[in-house]
Length: 399
Ligand SMILES: Cc1cc2nc3c(=O)[nH]c(=O)nc-3n(C[C@H](O)[C@H](O)[C@H](O)COP(=O)(O)OP(=O)(O)OC[C@H]3O[C@@H](n4cnc5c(N)ncnc54)[C@H](O)[C@@H]3O)c2cc1C
Image 1: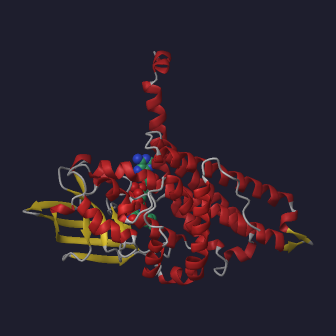
Image 2 (image 1 turned 90 degrees about the vertical axis):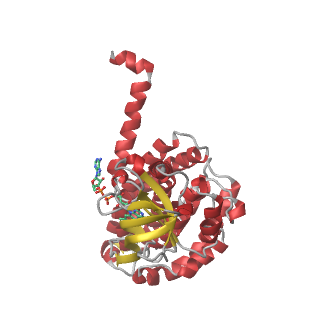
Image 3 (image 1 turned 90 degrees about the horizontal axis):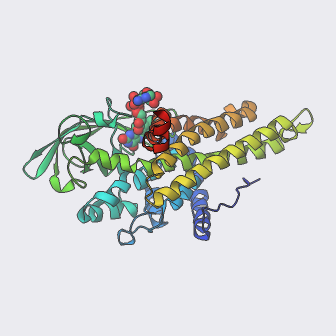
């Protein structure tokens, strides 16, 4: 039984054709290896090359760099389909590179950086990571302390990063460093080659879900990086990071939509087949209605995500609010669907031979990564409050 996805007014025929291409890539290149990569704690390096050759690592980037020049709707479709691979860790690994590490470079980096780092990453020849979080700075990005001090034509970088996806084997890191005073204005971004002397990968972190994605601790001890590796302008790093969170949040929201589809599909198959008290589980109204709720939740989340994707594609400032709402709702919806489908599978849902417990673990992090649900609520509420403050009618009322 497939998931009964409805046609969407947001998607063109090209998006639908692209979905078919990605779905067949997932079926052919990821699902057969999902168990092996989950156990290994990383997907194969070869997968990046295959994804690059299939055009999946540079969707929104310029054709001169090997990208496809598409929009955020394509990003959403790609994330939905990759998430159905039974290995969300693999999907995270690919998109931590294509969306998280490269998006800022695409918009802000010099042509030299783009040619040296982006083009081979889009081709899948290099692996990239985004390095922002530190032991003392997660949600509060402005608190980072990894320092970059200018010395002649170099920055000398010292500090530590943690929780970095692809961190243990990345060839380069789009790295947030402090080049100025404490606070938001003193942050810059540099492209950091991981063969730089003084760089060390610490622990490969053992985590609850997304286990096919390696997550690392990174140490920088007086690492020299040419000033030419600066991304955009010095002191503008926080602005670049914040203005590119939209893409990351859209990816997580779209992963959630894809996972909900996959779980509902797996659940329907199981409920149609599994007999109890002489009836398939699908014969019980309570489960049919729970499927109705799950599908409605999936479609509502998809709509929020597509609305956000459209606004982000149009570079409409309303995209930030839309994507925060999409990500908040997506995390709640997918965690609820994963719990329902786990319950539906009874004892079998506890068994590692089924993909269900893996999805249940994987989605726990959806309310954390790319901005926690608390931060999403904060951003949404700030937006609401600013509307009240700037709306003359409301000001009038307040007086
Ligand atoms: C698997 C995984 C992969 C990751 N990959 C990357 C990566 O590739 N690159 C990277 O840079 N980072 C990465 N991260 C880090 C991730 O972005 C952070 O974990 C996330 O931003 C939260 O930061 P934190 O863990 O320090 O939690 P904290 O910021 O310490 O938050 C702890 C709790 O306090 C709440 N909280 C914090 N501030 C507020 C507030 N103002 N109001 C209300 N509640 C608040 C949070 O919502 C949360 O519940 C990854 C994390 C994980 C788990």
